[in-house]
Image (cartoon, rainbow, N blue to C red):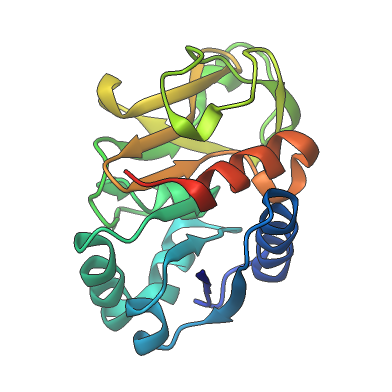
Length: 212
């Protein structure tokens, strides 16, 4: 299995790659995990992972038109894709951090500041462990997990106005915050799977086995 972690000058690339290697080993999968932005490698990959750390606009700029087109081509032909944190946010229609920036448009909704949490007196960024709420068995990504298990979050912006059919799991922080989304072969987690210990490795392992 060829697993490519997309190199777009974003953060957490090495951590995501290590999590994929460890998850593969735990599942007994023979996985070659590489970090690259090479178009040929991306188009021939069996799994694609887009980590994210920082501002939506900066991460979107790091993709650039060529990498966007390559990801569109690869995922349009069915290659499973996992976006992590800002990598998940980039799947949306657009983001409003530092002005409006167009996303990949793979899921419904937009990314904007978590003003509901701030209004409730909660600190931003939303940082630390939070419980995940989902319907058991609703999606392969959560197989082997139970509602109430924890993911590790670090973010001040979140998906708003998303489509219910694309929502796999939520967390509570001032209001309901999308935590896992999926549409066909494209999925994403707002929390950092690479920092979420057993829960993160379970989700990563499920992704490596996932066929949409």
